[in-house]
Length: 144
Length: 99
Image (cartoon, rainbow over the protein chains, first blue to last red):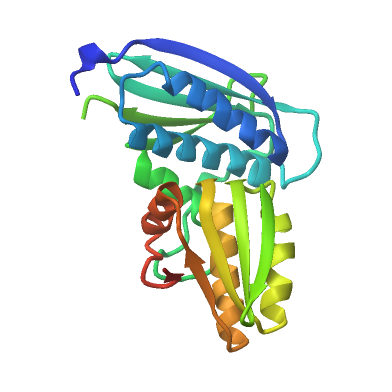
């Protein structure tokens, strides 16, 4: 698909950090991706990757504990390059400890990060700029 | 997520409906696990599941492993396209019982 068919956009939204908001995260993503001229299968994959990353914030940055904190998700597309930013104020991510389970070691759990890596071109963790603690960036070239 | 359970010829069929994410996995397990623990053969009908994430996949793996441990079986029936895609992404199509 040529990049001229993909519009540029920049949208962000805050979500309270809890598992019941994951459906709202998905709705936001679907709403944004509806504006893009990309295949439905790719839209579905991107929604999954974003929802998995948001789930990781709930599960790992906040240990699934109750909080009034919000996370921010920012979706940008520029010249066919998709960048999704996740900002949270949870526990700092220990980058070295992030790994998916071996895919042939069949057991529940550990698949979310694997899905993200399968779907996206790049996954980068950064220290968040104040007031944020963590800043995760997922990116993908939509021109391919 | 909503569900319905039917019983026929000693097979319990759980019809799941909606989106299965981390928020509803406990509810799904509360429905499925007691059936497996009662050593029933379980069919999970997934035709109306429009979305499943890694948490939902974990429920499928846990159900499959528990059933195997107890000498019974969980079979996934009428798997929706979107769920099948996630199962295949997790490379579980040869592990889980798909029908």
